[in-house]
Length: 173
Image (tube, rainbow, N blue to C red; front, side, top):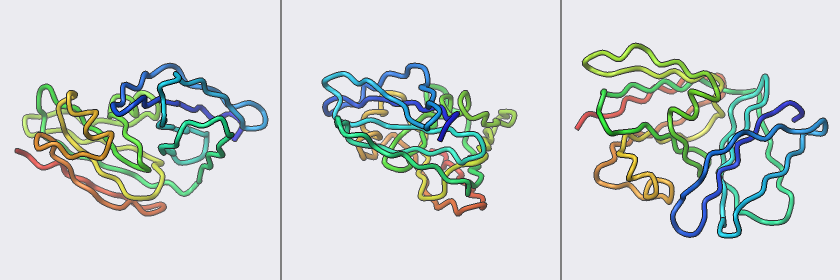
């Protein structure tokens, strides 16, 4: 898709120490090239194309070109969560993981005012499919990224349909 922005986050070895750099712009033919450290065996990709739903997925790192498709049929993801210090909201979808601050900066997610009881996040034009949203300490990122569910993580899952809305309420302690 020409005009898309792609973030490619390398996941080296058995622990995801993915570095977030700038986005990569696709060329006139919709192509992009990403360079990864030699230790990277997988990468999480986020694809933002004007007029299309946010696409997130995990792919093995290979020298073979990979085709990343996007879809116009996005939905709205709404998350409510208690306000908790030293915890982060993580989204797991398409085998990938990304944090709320990243998607807010990239995709213009809106966060309602945080009150004593919590806050509300609304993200438009998300790709349809299964989502798990977790509140967890940042130290649990690696376990979540590799499919674990640490006891300190509070997670809730649901399915977002095309043009639909998924509301996920993160449970309190």
